[in-house]
Image (cartoon, rainbow over all chains, first blue to last red; front, side, top):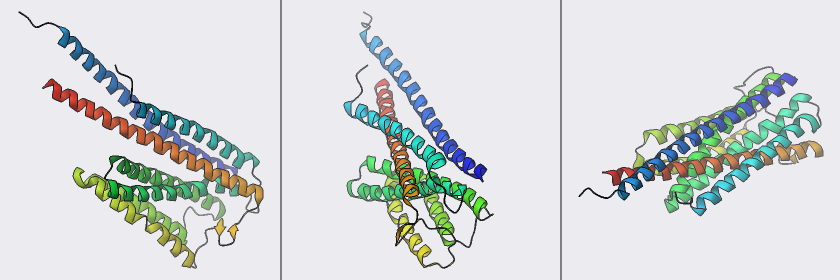
Length: 54
Length: 236
């Protein structure tokens, strides 16, 4: 009987953990994108500081 | 880089606080229902009530939240309400699946079968789950202009299935599913009722935490795509 109870708790915890893992992966993807965009912005700012050729 | 907007920081902190509260509440609820709560005539399998019933109740709360958010979207046309509709329906469906899995495990231990087509409560709950699964099919198949409107209308109309299911269960004579709460109140004694209520509070806090985190993510994704678009336009 105890096995059934443990199985239920394990299923619920496993599903919730998987859900959290998906959320964490999406957050990681967004942070990579933020990193990339900030590099693009920094490069754009550097290029605009270079004086035009005479 | 500029500092993040104050609103984002506030929402982010709120989501983090709710997540911590959810973890603490779940730990207390699981420990209490497994080790502390007293057993009744059903024996140890009755402990599943502290997990299965709160999950089922929270799934219905999630669909209720989606219904209210759908009405608010139709009134205000605000993107935030559309986000709440989608996330609530998704979480409601997740909790519905979990309630059916834990219910099936309980049924196998108590009735000796994983499922009973004779029980009105089980069948109507399955129908509710299928209705909300159809929500995502409809949303993904409708064009982006009408997507939010269709979703809001669906969330409002689909919620009617929940009181209908309750009415069907009350009028059906074939129900074998035990009832924890009826017209005479909660059908359990003091300490058991206490852990039953704690289970409901914990699961509700988990739902709010997941809702907050998902809403924050959707908000951030939208902000990121608008920045990406602005950068692409400025590059051209």
